[in-house]
Amino acid sequence: MDFELTDEHKMFREAIRNFGQKEVAPVMEEAEETGVFPRQLFKKAGEQGFLCPRYPVELGGGGGDKITECIMVEELNRVNAGIASSLMAQSGLATQPIYNYGSEEQKEKYLIPAIAGDMVGAFGLTEPNSGSDAASIKTTAVRDGNDYIINGTKIFITNGPFCDYVILAAYTDPTKRGEGINLFIVEKGTPGFSVARKLDKVGNRSIETGELVFEDCRVPAKNMIGEKEGGGFEQLASTLLSGRITYGARCTGVAQAALELTVQYAKERVQFGKPIIKFQNTRFKLAEMATSVDVMRTYTYRVAWMYSEGKDVSVEGPMVKLFTSELLQKLLGDAMQIHGGYGYMMEYPIQRFWRDGRLFTITEGTSEIQRMVIANRLGY
Image (cartoon, rainbow, N blue to C red):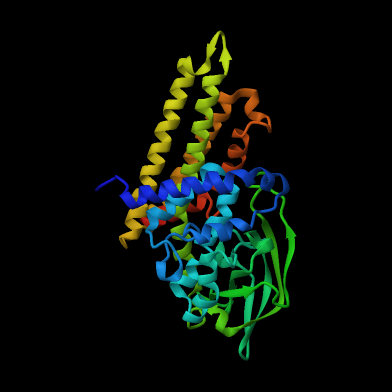
């Protein structure tokens, strides 16, 4: 296997890195302080093919593979994990179900504008009483003529407070656990669809995350993704599997940023008459951190390559999410320890990566769920 990036991958990495420094870095501090996402980034990223780099050029995408998407995710997370998360949701969860399973009309109306950054999407699965057990959602969609009447509540929804549409999971047949789920596209402004509240978070503060409520929300039947009732659970599984590989790149980007910040701090911080990077304990920790980042990146790209080649990654995808997110926790802990008391101060950026990275073992499938999926797939 060739572990070298192609020339196209390298050119894309340079371009998205420049985008991160030019467009994301200048606006991230205000976004972190106010909790308001700089929405203009969707359009700017879309114009350059950075927003959804894996979709075909004829749809407005970048025409790249899964590795291309992982490069985008890694580079943006090196700058700011919160802003990266909003853009990631657009490139994956909020568009992939339409791309893979949607009608031509749905692709024309929602997918193409989303790829261009003209529309912002969200993905509504998690509910107040349904997280890891996705099949236990309570949201329902009842057929009424040419429409479906949707009732339910979704929580922890990235881009929820300002999205133009949300891809919503709901039961069309609650008697069929899991199998009776369908996905629906619900537009902003649809009567009965409201944002109950915007959530205040410990980290990833530049994401706008919300609780969405649907009360007798009437949605056209043509907005159901797929041609028949049922089958939505398989659509969810496929979408989440792709996202778990992407999360490896997210963890790698945060880890790379933390390593760079910590090396720089260790060179500048003087104790006992010399920079602390001269002490063996510090150097050994940094060596372990560098090793971790390299292994995280290599494994993520390997599985991304497998995914692009059409190979079965139903085991490897959860492995990527589990391995990189758990390893990241140790790496961030070591980075904070090397920073000492200054690392705990808000004026030092390492604390932001520490707060942001803590989420990664929880969202889009907890580490416990990843272990369960891996064990089941391996027949343990």
